[in-house]
Image (cartoon, rainbow, N blue to C red; front, side, top):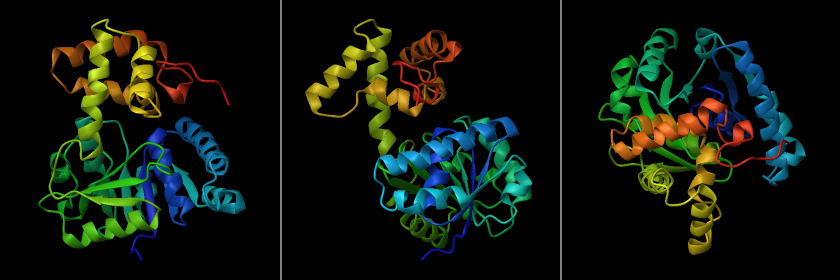
Length: 288
Protein backbone atom coordinates (compact mmCIF):
# COMPACT_ATOMS: atom_id res chain seq x y z
CA UNK A 1 0.00 0.00 0.00
CA UNK A 2 1.05 3.57 -0.59
CA UNK A 3 -0.21 6.85 0.80
CA UNK A 4 0.34 8.44 -2.61
CA UNK A 5 -2.80 8.94 -4.72
CA UNK A 6 -2.33 12.10 -6.82
CA UNK A 7 0.92 12.49 -8.75
CA UNK A 8 2.13 15.46 -10.77
CA UNK A 9 4.97 14.98 -13.24
CA UNK A 10 6.80 18.16 -14.22
CA UNK A 11 8.17 17.78 -17.73
CA UNK A 12 6.70 15.78 -20.60
CA UNK A 13 9.81 14.93 -22.58
CA UNK A 14 10.90 11.40 -23.36
CA UNK A 15 11.39 10.24 -19.76
CA UNK A 16 8.83 12.51 -18.11
CA UNK A 17 6.08 11.17 -20.36
CA UNK A 18 7.17 7.59 -19.63
CA UNK A 19 7.10 8.17 -15.87
CA UNK A 20 3.67 9.77 -16.08
CA UNK A 21 2.24 7.01 -18.27
CA UNK A 22 3.71 4.18 -16.16
CA UNK A 23 2.23 5.79 -13.05
CA UNK A 24 -1.18 6.24 -14.70
CA UNK A 25 -1.06 2.68 -16.05
CA UNK A 26 -0.94 1.45 -12.47
CA UNK A 27 -4.08 3.34 -11.52
CA UNK A 28 -2.80 6.63 -10.13
CA UNK A 29 -4.28 10.00 -10.96
CA UNK A 30 -1.61 11.90 -12.88
CA UNK A 31 -1.26 15.51 -13.97
CA UNK A 32 1.33 16.01 -16.71
CA UNK A 33 2.72 19.55 -16.56
CA UNK A 34 4.77 21.46 -19.08
CA UNK A 35 5.41 25.12 -19.82
CA UNK A 36 2.93 25.88 -22.60
CA UNK A 37 -0.03 24.56 -24.59
CA UNK A 38 2.04 23.69 -27.66
CA UNK A 39 4.31 21.36 -25.68
CA UNK A 40 1.28 19.83 -23.98
CA UNK A 41 -0.18 18.96 -27.40
CA UNK A 42 3.08 17.26 -28.32
CA UNK A 43 2.90 15.38 -25.03
CA UNK A 44 -0.57 14.06 -25.83
CA UNK A 45 0.80 12.50 -29.01
CA UNK A 46 3.68 10.99 -27.03
CA UNK A 47 1.24 9.45 -24.52
CA UNK A 48 -0.85 7.99 -27.33
CA UNK A 49 2.31 6.43 -28.75
CA UNK A 50 3.21 4.98 -25.35
CA UNK A 51 -0.27 3.49 -25.02
CA UNK A 52 0.30 1.63 -28.28
CA UNK A 53 3.84 0.63 -27.29
CA UNK A 54 2.53 -1.04 -24.12
CA UNK A 55 0.15 -3.04 -26.31
CA UNK A 56 2.77 -3.86 -28.96
CA UNK A 57 5.29 -4.99 -26.34
CA UNK A 58 2.69 -7.14 -24.58
CA UNK A 59 2.71 -5.38 -21.22
CA UNK A 60 0.24 -7.31 -19.08
CA UNK A 61 -3.23 -5.78 -19.23
CA UNK A 62 -2.39 -3.14 -21.84
CA UNK A 63 -4.43 -4.70 -24.63
CA UNK A 64 -7.34 -5.45 -22.29
CA UNK A 65 -8.11 -1.81 -21.58
CA UNK A 66 -5.05 -0.95 -19.51
CA UNK A 67 -3.61 1.49 -22.04
CA UNK A 68 -6.97 3.19 -22.54
CA UNK A 69 -7.47 3.47 -18.77
CA UNK A 70 -3.98 4.93 -18.36
CA UNK A 71 -4.73 7.68 -20.85
CA UNK A 72 -7.96 8.44 -18.97
CA UNK A 73 -5.98 8.77 -15.73
CA UNK A 74 -3.81 11.57 -17.17
CA UNK A 75 -4.81 15.23 -17.27
CA UNK A 76 -2.71 18.13 -18.48
CA UNK A 77 -1.70 21.57 -17.28
CA UNK A 78 0.64 24.39 -18.14
CA UNK A 79 -0.28 26.32 -14.97
CA UNK A 80 2.15 25.22 -12.25
CA UNK A 81 -0.03 26.20 -9.28
CA UNK A 82 -2.99 24.33 -10.72
CA UNK A 83 -0.87 21.29 -11.50
CA UNK A 84 0.41 20.80 -7.95
CA UNK A 85 -2.45 22.06 -5.75
CA UNK A 86 -3.67 18.54 -4.83
CA UNK A 87 -0.45 16.59 -5.38
CA UNK A 88 0.71 13.98 -2.88
CA UNK A 89 3.87 13.60 -4.93
CA UNK A 90 5.56 15.84 -7.48
CA UNK A 91 8.16 14.17 -9.70
CA UNK A 92 10.40 16.73 -11.40
CA UNK A 93 11.81 15.75 -14.80
CA UNK A 94 13.09 19.06 -16.20
CA UNK A 95 16.38 19.73 -18.04
CA UNK A 96 19.55 18.71 -16.24
CA UNK A 97 20.61 22.25 -15.36
CA UNK A 98 21.07 23.29 -11.74
CA UNK A 99 19.74 26.82 -12.17
CA UNK A 100 16.55 25.62 -13.89
CA UNK A 101 15.83 23.07 -11.17
CA UNK A 102 16.56 25.50 -8.33
CA UNK A 103 14.27 28.13 -9.83
CA UNK A 104 11.51 25.57 -10.25
CA UNK A 105 11.75 24.34 -6.65
CA UNK A 106 11.67 27.92 -5.39
CA UNK A 107 8.31 28.29 -7.15
CA UNK A 108 7.06 24.89 -6.02
CA UNK A 109 7.84 25.66 -2.38
CA UNK A 110 5.26 28.46 -2.52
CA UNK A 111 2.62 26.64 -4.57
CA UNK A 112 2.42 23.04 -3.35
CA UNK A 113 0.53 22.11 -0.16
CA UNK A 114 2.58 21.10 2.91
CA UNK A 115 1.69 17.40 2.43
CA UNK A 116 3.42 17.18 -0.96
CA UNK A 117 6.61 15.16 -1.34
CA UNK A 118 9.02 16.48 -3.98
CA UNK A 119 11.14 14.01 -5.95
CA UNK A 120 13.79 14.87 -8.51
CA UNK A 121 14.58 12.53 -11.37
CA UNK A 122 17.95 14.22 -11.86
CA UNK A 123 20.47 11.75 -13.26
CA UNK A 124 23.64 13.57 -12.22
CA UNK A 125 22.85 16.27 -9.63
CA UNK A 126 22.85 15.44 -5.94
CA UNK A 127 19.57 16.14 -4.14
CA UNK A 128 21.51 18.10 -1.51
CA UNK A 129 22.28 20.67 -4.24
CA UNK A 130 18.53 21.32 -4.47
CA UNK A 131 17.08 20.64 -1.02
CA UNK A 132 17.45 24.16 0.36
CA UNK A 133 15.29 25.51 -2.48
CA UNK A 134 12.38 23.14 -1.82
CA UNK A 135 11.05 24.66 1.39
CA UNK A 136 10.72 21.09 2.73
CA UNK A 137 14.10 19.32 2.80
CA UNK A 138 12.62 16.62 5.03
CA UNK A 139 10.10 15.76 2.26
CA UNK A 140 12.53 15.91 -0.66
CA UNK A 141 14.17 12.90 -2.31
CA UNK A 142 15.73 11.70 -5.56
CA UNK A 143 13.73 9.16 -7.57
CA UNK A 144 15.60 8.16 -10.70
CA UNK A 145 14.12 6.13 -13.55
CA UNK A 146 15.84 4.45 -16.48
CA UNK A 147 14.66 5.05 -20.04
CA UNK A 148 11.90 2.67 -21.26
CA UNK A 149 10.60 2.45 -17.70
CA UNK A 150 8.08 -0.32 -18.44
CA UNK A 151 10.98 -2.61 -19.38
CA UNK A 152 14.03 -1.26 -17.51
CA UNK A 153 11.98 -0.80 -14.37
CA UNK A 154 14.49 0.30 -11.75
CA UNK A 155 13.60 3.19 -9.46
CA UNK A 156 16.74 4.46 -7.72
CA UNK A 157 15.82 6.15 -4.45
CA UNK A 158 18.28 8.45 -2.71
CA UNK A 159 17.57 10.84 0.14
CA UNK A 160 19.68 13.52 1.77
CA UNK A 161 20.66 13.77 5.44
CA UNK A 162 17.39 15.68 5.94
CA UNK A 163 15.00 13.24 4.24
CA UNK A 164 12.90 11.46 6.86
CA UNK A 165 12.80 7.65 6.92
CA UNK A 166 9.00 7.81 6.54
CA UNK A 167 9.34 9.69 3.24
CA UNK A 168 11.90 7.18 1.98
CA UNK A 169 9.51 4.33 2.81
CA UNK A 170 6.60 6.14 1.15
CA UNK A 171 8.59 6.44 -2.08
CA UNK A 172 9.71 2.80 -1.89
CA UNK A 173 6.05 1.80 -1.55
CA UNK A 174 5.04 4.10 -4.40
CA UNK A 175 7.74 2.69 -6.70
CA UNK A 176 6.59 -0.86 -5.98
CA UNK A 177 2.94 0.08 -6.56
CA UNK A 178 3.82 1.46 -10.01
CA UNK A 179 5.55 -1.70 -11.21
CA UNK A 180 9.07 -0.52 -10.48
CA UNK A 181 11.86 -2.23 -8.56
CA UNK A 182 12.94 0.15 -5.78
CA UNK A 183 16.71 0.49 -5.46
CA UNK A 184 17.54 2.16 -2.13
CA UNK A 185 20.91 3.91 -2.19
CA UNK A 186 22.56 4.11 1.22
CA UNK A 187 24.01 7.61 0.84
CA UNK A 188 24.22 10.39 -1.73
CA UNK A 189 26.31 9.53 -4.74
CA UNK A 190 26.42 11.48 -8.00
CA UNK A 191 25.15 9.28 -10.81
CA UNK A 192 23.35 6.88 -8.47
CA UNK A 193 24.16 3.27 -9.41
CA UNK A 194 23.06 3.04 -13.03
CA UNK A 195 24.69 6.21 -14.31
CA UNK A 196 27.85 5.62 -12.28
CA UNK A 197 28.30 2.66 -14.60
CA UNK A 198 26.73 4.08 -17.76
CA UNK A 199 28.24 7.58 -18.00
CA UNK A 200 31.92 6.48 -18.15
CA UNK A 201 30.94 3.91 -20.78
CA UNK A 202 29.24 6.54 -22.93
CA UNK A 203 32.12 8.95 -22.33
CA UNK A 204 34.58 6.40 -23.68
CA UNK A 205 32.47 6.06 -26.82
CA UNK A 206 32.42 9.84 -27.20
CA UNK A 207 36.22 9.90 -26.95
CA UNK A 208 36.54 7.39 -29.78
CA UNK A 209 34.39 9.60 -32.00
CA UNK A 210 36.08 12.88 -31.05
CA UNK A 211 39.53 11.39 -31.62
CA UNK A 212 38.54 10.07 -35.06
CA UNK A 213 39.17 6.46 -34.08
CA UNK A 214 35.88 5.12 -35.43
CA UNK A 215 32.39 6.14 -36.50
CA UNK A 216 29.34 5.46 -34.30
CA UNK A 217 28.11 2.45 -36.27
CA UNK A 218 31.46 0.68 -35.97
CA UNK A 219 31.73 1.42 -32.24
CA UNK A 220 28.23 0.08 -31.67
CA UNK A 221 28.79 -2.98 -33.85
CA UNK A 222 31.96 -3.85 -31.92
CA UNK A 223 30.24 -3.53 -28.56
CA UNK A 224 27.20 -5.58 -29.59
CA UNK A 225 29.24 -8.42 -31.09
CA UNK A 226 31.91 -8.42 -28.39
CA UNK A 227 29.57 -8.39 -25.40
CA UNK A 228 26.21 -9.67 -26.63
CA UNK A 229 24.58 -6.42 -25.52
CA UNK A 230 21.48 -5.46 -27.52
CA UNK A 231 22.59 -1.84 -28.03
CA UNK A 232 25.82 0.05 -28.53
CA UNK A 233 26.66 3.36 -26.83
CA UNK A 234 25.58 5.61 -29.69
CA UNK A 235 22.26 3.81 -29.95
CA UNK A 236 21.86 4.47 -26.22
CA UNK A 237 22.70 8.15 -26.79
CA UNK A 238 19.88 8.35 -29.33
CA UNK A 239 17.41 6.80 -26.89
CA UNK A 240 18.45 9.04 -23.99
CA UNK A 241 18.37 12.07 -26.27
CA UNK A 242 21.29 14.15 -27.48
CA UNK A 243 20.14 17.24 -25.58
CA UNK A 244 20.43 15.31 -22.32
CA UNK A 245 23.84 14.00 -23.37
CA UNK A 246 24.86 17.56 -24.22
CA UNK A 247 23.70 19.00 -20.89
CA UNK A 248 25.43 16.29 -18.86
CA UNK A 249 28.69 16.55 -20.83
CA UNK A 250 28.58 20.35 -20.55
CA UNK A 251 29.04 20.07 -16.77
CA UNK A 252 32.28 18.11 -17.14
CA UNK A 253 35.33 20.41 -17.60
CA UNK A 254 37.48 17.67 -19.11
CA UNK A 255 38.70 18.84 -22.56
CA UNK A 256 37.54 15.60 -24.17
CA UNK A 257 34.02 16.09 -22.79
CA UNK A 258 33.98 19.66 -24.04
CA UNK A 259 35.11 18.52 -27.50
CA UNK A 260 32.21 16.07 -27.49
CA UNK A 261 29.84 18.89 -26.46
CA UNK A 262 31.02 20.93 -29.46
CA UNK A 263 30.60 17.97 -31.80
CA UNK A 264 27.09 17.22 -30.54
CA UNK A 265 26.00 20.81 -30.96
CA UNK A 266 27.46 21.45 -34.39
CA UNK A 267 26.76 18.11 -36.10
CA UNK A 268 23.47 17.18 -34.49
CA UNK A 269 21.63 19.50 -32.09
CA UNK A 270 21.90 22.64 -34.24
CA UNK A 271 20.45 20.60 -37.12
CA UNK A 272 17.49 19.35 -35.07
CA UNK A 273 18.91 15.83 -34.81
CA UNK A 274 18.12 15.09 -31.18
CA UNK A 275 17.84 11.30 -31.23
CA UNK A 276 14.98 8.85 -31.61
CA UNK A 277 12.39 11.40 -30.44
CA UNK A 278 13.01 13.51 -33.57
CA UNK A 279 13.59 10.61 -35.97
CA UNK A 280 17.31 11.27 -36.33
CA UNK A 281 20.38 11.47 -34.14
CA UNK A 282 23.47 9.38 -34.66
CA UNK A 283 21.09 7.16 -36.65
CA UNK A 284 17.93 7.75 -38.67
CA UNK A 285 14.67 6.14 -37.60
CA UNK A 286 11.57 5.38 -39.66
CA UNK A 287 8.53 7.49 -38.91
CA UNK A 288 5.69 5.58 -37.26
